[in-house]
Image (cartoon, rainbow, N blue to C red; front, side, top):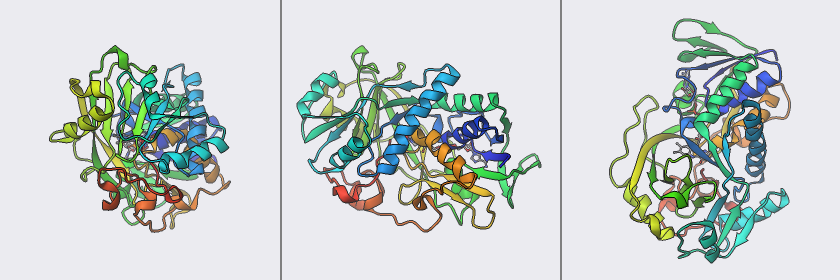
Length: 394
Ligand SMILES: Cc1cc2nc3c(=O)[nH]c(=O)nc-3n(C[C@H](O)[C@H](O)[C@H](O)COP(=O)(O)OP(=O)(O)OC[C@H]3O[C@@H](n4cnc5c(N)ncnc54)[C@H](O)[C@@H]3O)c2cc1C
């Protein structure tokens, strides 16, 4: 395989471009925006990187491998892209998602600590252990500076020879047609178009685009990363980070937001989103209950029905591939998925069947605790049984 056209320079497409150019493949990377544009999902300032994925060994290994590759990108680009602040899972049940995570981390040699709820006092500047069964702390988890990382991926791909093209593309058989009329062909064509993938391939890619809200609070110097970990309250579907780069303490609800067309402007958050997030922060970190809001923004999830990624060959054009469906947890995996994707493009190990185009079943067993199924939407400690633990966002 000598040449590949990649449409979409988010975490999936830009990582693949970086991987393939380093392998000597001729790559054309197309995007309608400049790399890191805020309308792309990968362009948030920060994204969590954690290895814990409940009982799912495959995503666990992928996240761990991705951490190594993000570090490689840092070394190659000379940029500080990963803040290794650790991440603490706030487990509300003894036998829930977090408990299912532990043996997988153990089996893969990934460092973790299982802590009593009171130990949160030494991790966070303000703390209440109300409602918690235990803490699962991943000291080598952290936060990727996402927008900067995507720009670094594109820059490094270009440094290794990728042609970076600005333009809006649509499929033209097995080729790519740009809005200026140019037609691009390659031995393979990969469509990694985030929330736009569903519109480009409506019969193949069941991707729903939703509006999600992020809030940033002024916690003061005590909350600065990397001294304070990121956190996930899986059962209440809330996650956040300490203050990275002066942005403020970030907190967000992981419940699916309302549908939002990929081409619609990202609205400024309004309504009761802030008060919902603030109430949950106040429960866990009392000092943040009244912390001033210093930022609020919207961005898009691109959700598959079951939360698993989409990475599959087009049924009618064998040289064409679809890649995406990050479903609220895809950013961190970009470079690891690129490794597997590059191998599959060359005819190596096939990608997992669950990333394929077959119909997907929404449901509790494969949704996050913040997913759309009503059974798992309601607030409260609705931990799934370990054997059917769904995936978590973030
Ligand atoms: C609020 C929020 C928080 C998240 N938190 C985390 C987290 O903590 N950890 C984590 O791992 N993941 C997280 N995610 C998920 C993760 O950010 C996404 O799954 C991932 O970034 C999606 O990457 P992508 O490459 O598929 O899409 P995108 O980043 O959207 O990239 C797709 C690109 O394709 C381009 N494109 C689309 N259509 C065309 C076209 N026709 N022609 C040319 N170009 C086109 C777009 O311009 C865009 O640049 C979060 C997502 C959100 C919204």
